[in-house]
Length: 199
Length: 199
DNA sequence: CCTACCGATCGGTAGG
DNA sequence: CCTACCGATCGGTAGG
Image (cartoon, chains in turn green, red, purple, brown):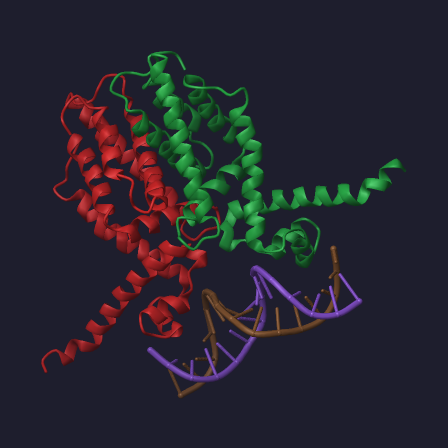
C-alpha cells in the first residue's frame, strides 16, 4: 500500500479539519461558553483528551475555527480583487451564498454577540473584524463614487456602517425565521437604491 | 411604626425587582447559558436557593426578565399612540435612549443571537418578537405613505425589515466599538432618506 | 429566607 | 490517541 507511508500525517490533518468543522457547528449552535469539548470530540469519534492533543485549550480551538473561516471566505471575497461597485456586488453574493450555509451564519451571529463582552476570548478578534469590514466597505463606496455610480447625498462612511449593520441584522432575522427571509434580496435592494447603475 | 404591617410584602417585591435587575445585567453580560444563579443571588445579597424561592427555575427567571423589559419599554414606545412618521421618529428616539442603557442593549443583542437555537428557552419569545416588530413597523411605513410622507419607490414591508435589521446590527457594532458608534444618528439618516418630510 | 446536599458536567492534567 | 482522575461549578431539592 503506497499510501501507508504518509498515512499517519494525512490522518492527523484530516482529523484536525474534522474537529474544526464539528467545533464550528457547535460554537454556532450553543456559543463558545455553551459548547463542550467532550461533545465535539465524541462527534469526531475521539475522546476529549484526544481533541486536546490537536488543540491544547478550548480557546485555541475557537481561534483556529475563526482563522479557518477567514482563510476560506476571505479568499473567496477577494477573488479577482473587485473594487467599487464590483465589490459591493460581491458582498451581496456572499449573503446569497451564506443563505446555503446556516452553520457559518450561526457561528458569526452568535459569537459576535457573545464577544461583545470584554473578557470573551474572541473579543479582540471581533472588534478588529468589524473595524476592517466597515473601513474596506467605505473604500468600496468611495470607489463607486469616483466611478460616478453613487447617488448624490450618500456618504460613503455612513453607508458602509449601514451595510455591515444590515447584513448582521438580516442574519439574525433569517435564523429566527427558519431561514425563510430573503437576505440577499433585501440587501441587493438596499444597495441598488444607493447606486445610479445596475448592480 | 406604621410601615411594619406591609413590610414583609414590600420587602419581597423590592427583592424581586432587585433580582430582575441583576439577572438582566448577567444575562446581558454572559448570556443565558453563561449566567449563574449563584452569582446573581450573591449580587442580591441572598443564597441561590433564596433566589429560587422567588423564581422556581432559571428559565422562569429569564422569561420574567424579558416580560419586565417589555412592560417598561412597550409602554414607553406606545405612549401617546403615535402613528406613521411619528412612530418611526419614536423608534429613532428609542435608539437614542438605549445608547444610555448598555445593559438593555446587551440583553437583547446577546439573547436574540443565543435564542436562534431551536431549543433555547427564549426561542419562541424572540421569533414572535421579531415577527411583530417587523409587522407593526410595516404598518407605520404604510401610514407614512398614506400621509404622503414616504418617498416613492420605498416598499413598506421591505423597509420595515431593513429598519429592524439595521437597529440590531448597529447595536452589535455599538457594543463592540465601546459605545462610540452613533446609533441614533445613522438610524435617523436612514429613515430621513426614505421620507419627503422632516423627521 | 438558610445550610447542606444531590447528580451531572465542565476544562484540563497525569501517566501511559 | 486512550483511561482515569482533578477541583470547580452547575441547576435544583430536602428539610428546616
